Image 1 (cartoon, rainbow, N blue to C red):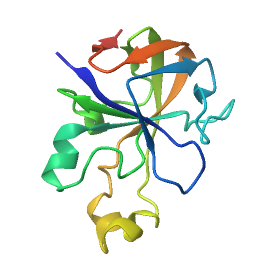
Image 2: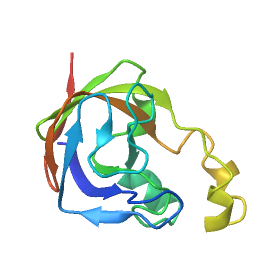
Image 3: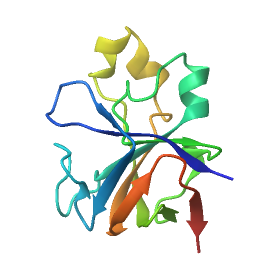
Amino acid sequence: MARVQNLFRASKKHLPMEELSEVRAVVDTGFEGCAHARSGRKRQVLLVDRETLEAMDLTPGIIRENITTDGLNVNSLEIGQLLRAGEARLEVSAICAACDQMEAIRPGLQKELWGRRGMLCRVLQGGVIRLGDSIEKLS
């Protein structure tokens, strides 16, 4: 079963991510208190799977994801896929392109992450998401 392994939000852009034990997802916005939360945008919540991070020797949160998943192949999710994480319902909205900020983490990381940086989601239904919550695909 897929689950929430880590939760993060950016209190301010370009600062390290803040790790949380729970967070409120706000409809059509993102995580409460996150600098990246914006109404009407495709990038409201970024999902990255633990398995990809481990394969690339990266620690959770370093590539600025909001949710690190366990047991879910995030990069294989299709645009439009609906997910439930805790009380929130998410819709996969876009592939997250690896940006040049990745180069500050490790030279060459932007290229290494091409097609593997995770998926962006919109928040369709708000609610609390906690560490360990299940993540399920909805039809």
